[in-house]
Image (cartoon, rainbow, N blue to C red; front, side, top):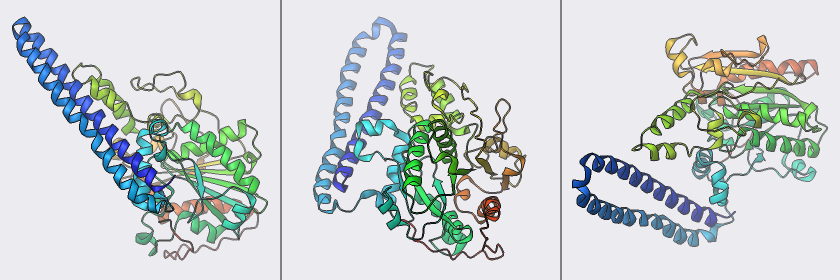
Length: 435
């Protein structure tokens, strides 16, 4: 869709959000007033009637202001229509803002504001891919038989894989993907998707895209590796399960799944949000705030306990209090699974690390080592890095060192020679970061 349609949809979204907040404030006000006037009994009836008439009028007037952002967006869209050939997500700040909205709103965005809803697409370093033999050949004239697909996390875009590139490598162009291309002969592909949808839904979509990607790849594919950050690791695991269950021809080519700071057993912030919403629902005065809090997307609610497949959420109340209904689908025997976890402290046994983990995910969840549930990562396929935060794992040299170490095993077995010298921290990988 063009820029003008996205601007109009943004105005509608802001207007709807404003109206929703006003309605919530009005409901809270009314609930407090009802309790107050009930305590004052019939003597307060005249005052109550006057109060209700005045406040309802005030809220109607304030709520009518939701039409203002819509009107402004219509005018702005009319001018922007001249530039509809420039897609809005190609603008980095706008693209990141749209990803944030998608992550929070999820499926409702597609129903109410479809111009802002992200579809699932695969990208090279600089452009969206056309998944046909001709389109892929044009995008990757030097395609290799080894594909690595990067799956970003919640409220992120594929642009996050370039995070801190200049700080670590002295260039804006370096990612885990560009270095794997240089060092181990992979061809890097990047996923963009609506992170507000259920993990299982995104897993199914990714499985279908991988089928198209492998079928149209310019050369015979010998190996596919999936590297997921945060929620992306759950989606990668889900895609493997669904590709295997669906009998997809791409499934046997998936050889590696690497989970970077993935909440395999859940994320504490989503658990806290669930508990807070439940507590707010316990009192009439704050119940409207609970309904507002529970408008969080299906995707973020899946992060509460790491819901991976449809059976983990179908037919259950998504807002029940801290109930872990997630199953433990077995890992596929022909796929090697890895995890990397971190904490903000130097040791994961530190009391602070036990509480906050890396800021978003605690180490037991990243490692799949919980009290009730365990993910059966092989002993040598897990790695801990201390003193980093959640987003460091997207493009940190120490993270890449471990990724390279793991994936080089297969390369050496297949005769692929590593060219990486880890004594050299300045990366000279070629490529163009998205803008």
